[in-house]
Amino acid sequence: MDRLNAVWTALRPGFARAGRHLRRGAAAYAVLVISLLTALASWNYVRQSVEAQNRAQFDEATQATKSAIYRRVIAYRDAMYGARGLLHVSGSIEQDEWSDYVDSMPLETHLEGLQALGFAKYVKPGQRESYSRAARKEGMPGLWPESDGERSAYFPIEFVAPSNEANRRMIGYDAYSDPAHRSVMDRARDIGSPQATKMDYVLTDAPSRAEADITLRKGYVVYLPVYQEDEPKGTVAERRRALRGFVVGTLRAHRLFAHAYGKTFHPAIDFEVYDGKAVASSSLLYDNNDVKNAGDTGDTALFTERRAMQAAGIIIQPRRWALFFTTLPKFEEGAKSNLPTFVFGSGVAVSLLLFGITWMLVRSRSRALHASEDLKEANRELEEANTELQRSRESLVTAREEERRRLRRDLHDGVGPQLAALTLELETASDIVSDYPEASVLVAKLSERAREIVSDVRYSVHALRPPALDELGLVGALREGALQYGPPGLRISVDNPQELSHLPAAVEVACYRIAQEALANVVRHASASHCSIHIRLDEEARVLSLEVEDDGRGIREDVRAGVGKISMRERTEELGGSCTVRPLAGGGTLVRALLPFQTARDTHRREE
Image (cartoon, rainbow, N blue to C red; front, side):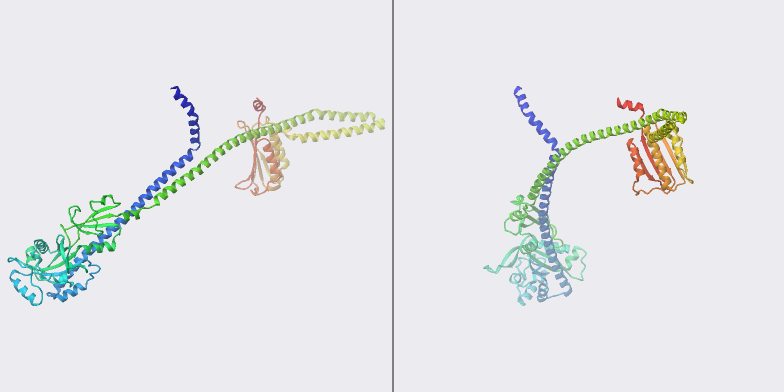
């Protein structure tokens, strides 16, 4: 336990420093985590987008191949239906007409893979010998293979095109002799639509360097029934009686699928076709690279898909093809992209850059906060100093005005009467010494000098404080001033508020002087007919409100402040108040001054 405590004691300062570091840089680390998560999400999105793009390319190629096969099979069907239409229109045609029809079709494009298009004529049992003799007479082989016994029907190939060695050898061949073909022909006859055999080997021309002239290839034989035009075909029995023969289409599987693959498919995708719905249990019809991948390596490829296909209108159930597609290593090499890695690397780099920028901003903000705290403290101290300075200023102004009021009272009540008495005594002395010229002149000079001193004292008394304030009070002084300033045509009214005798001298003087200045401006500039002076005292707020309002032309807001406005503002600011001068909406001007005051009791409390 002691060892653990020692280890914890040693590590605790480091943990504390790490905690402080994380707290200071919490925003920067949050930005780093969010940026890295965003980079990871971007990498995943781009990776999925690249994979989706490759998947779309794969799906597009597989769907294009399937569509090409559909179009080709439908072209075979249309060619067979066209041949049946030729038989219906002509009634009876010859080999040359048949060859012309087949040669007119674009075998090298839309009908690539069609080995032969022929007509198998319906020959009844009693017509077998006569058909063979007529065919030999025209240089054609008779009906073959020879039958061991009499059959219910024969269907020898009467004519076929295009004309090549493999197709010419099929003339006279009776496919009805083969049980597999017979069941397909019977089904086509009874249903009335084209039917295909299972995978079969069809006779084709051999390659150019082969020893044999012909060879067998994987393919299909499709039978389309041809009926007599004027016979009813509503039921199976009627269709059997109206049967005239079959249009026979021989398809080569390799050329059919190879042409569709070569025109539409991606070379790095393996394409295999199986004769049936299941790949594992069906025969391979076509493999583009001759390497069977279905069931072997297809599961390890990038993309693999199996599709069942039914050739509409020609190859119907139970005939189906299973199409197998899988990507080859070449496709996977082309599908590789460095974009996700680049996006992730760029995201990490941007995350680190944002982390660095945020960290610097956090540090700068921390320093700014410290500086702000210091600045706030300095501002607080400055505000306290300003407040104290304003209080000192207010106290000084108040003390000055109080001292002036005391001096005026002393001069008026003390020095003034004494000087007046001295003047009277000098006048009495002048009468006494009138018989003595020299003394009489000296006393006269002293009397004149005494009167000058009395006049100077009176001037000083008036300069210290308006006498009307002490004689009449604030309201009376304002009313007396209104009478003095009121020219003809201007009516001035002064409200009669509550008792104002207890106001400090500084407030009385300031209110009186501001009212005098406002009245002077009204008389000089306003051209008003009425001016009102409102005085309101708010005991709770310790504020005296003065409003001087006139109905004159008003003052413009853009007018530069003159000496009068500056003087009014300075007098209110000396007491910590405010003064505003603004025009009224209906015309005229309003001067409003707020003068805070303190009683002797308030001053005593503040000093305590």
